[in-house]
Length: 221
Ligand SMILES: [Zn+2]
Image (cartoon, rainbow, N blue to C red; front, side, top):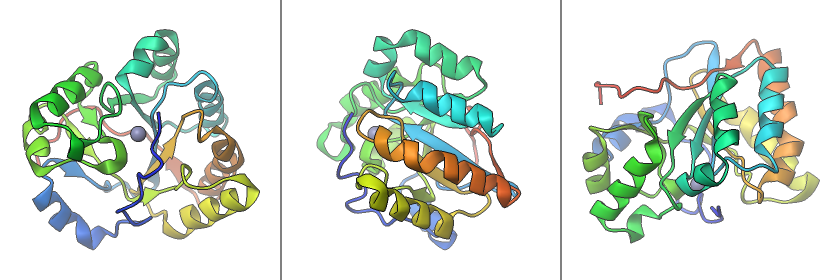
């Protein structure tokens, strides 16, 4: 699934002081957690056979867990892979059925697609980070809307110089409680293979880990 313009209106890093204002405009959204020794690595757009199994092995090797925001159509195409993600201790959330763009989709159609992609999860991430206030209000009773603190930018670069840029950005902005976005898609596989092992090792060296997000709906926002 493509996401080339995901970061077009979003900066690489969303500072904590902005979160209350963002939650006021987009009710039901979460941008970080209060974890003190953990970050929350997340992967969008899978499950994808050419990269997701490798991602699972990397997480295992570092003894970390993550949250996978799956596209419903991909999950239907690869049900065994989706099961494996769950059986290996990770959390799964919805990412719409066909990677719909919230700003270009009517509220009812968007919410129907988002809810259909949840598969029992209480977590949802809008594709491209593009969701309207009305869509948030309609989704809030059904799922927590998980945004992010740090965008890796894995979808926007190529080659080893691109990977170096992504790593630099991740290391500069990662804090405890950060929600960090990667993509387990065929398009981002090349960058992910260059970036993820070093990033997870760097987390470990800093005394941190990655844990999956809680899969239930929180009442506080
Ligand atoms: Zn996406």
